[in-house]
Image 1 (cartoon, rainbow, N blue to C red):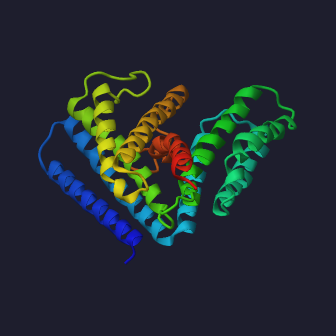
Image 2 (tube, one colour; image 1 turned 180 degrees about the vertical axis):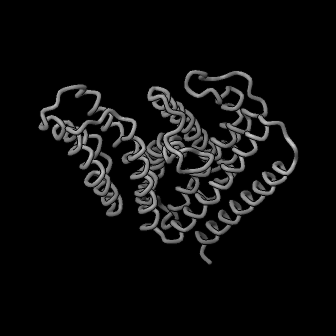
Image 3 (cartoon, rainbow, N blue to C red; image 1 turned 45 degrees about the horizontal axis):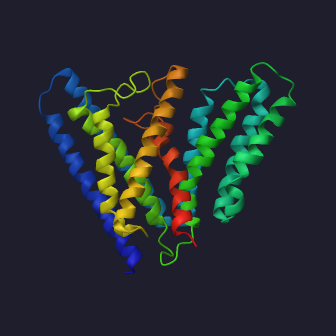
Length: 315
């Protein structure tokens, strides 16, 4: 067994143990009599744990399939997230060409560019060419009502659900001296730290949270939960330095940065939901809402993590 495979196996076993322990704790809590409010919290926690089993299995299968599996998985996630985002826009019949282009042209091209390692183009394709092309597709339909709002919403949808999410599989294209063939572990590091930060913020908030950090955007987020979750995720990322090309202290700094970006990503996406008057982006994932509800922190963390890693450690 190579060093990479040994690391991946150790990581998968560790995740399996954590999820098993979490499921056991959830079952024990469910078996004990509780008041209605506590029961709701425990039920939500168990739904999250069950959803994490599904997500862990899907990620494990994608990692096992290699590069193509990872790109395919996140391409599907982008499609599902894009669909959720578009349902909350002010799109009209005149925008059908623009929407069709985003779903069936822009999205596959972005992931093909990543699959072919065309780094110089996949980083500018959507922010430059798609940004300019979408309003052209809309304006030739001759509908001027709410034009800026309609186009901007679809541009945001493309940036958030395609461009930003695609930076996760794009980590596979990084050339890091001495780390060849191990880039899947970078994806594991990113997802584990960012998602753990979300979970730990939730747990710390339930245990010690008193001061709401943004009551009109996300009432459940507290200062205590934010601080406890980010610091805990930073420690977790530091402990996972061995699966990265980073030194221990560098892994800690990277973990803190992506945890902070994940937190603010969650706030931004919450603001959009509140603006549209909805609680969740969808109801596909039990205990988590929609795909964007689960990916909101990754959306903001992935591009920053990619560029920092590329700049400091890339060839």
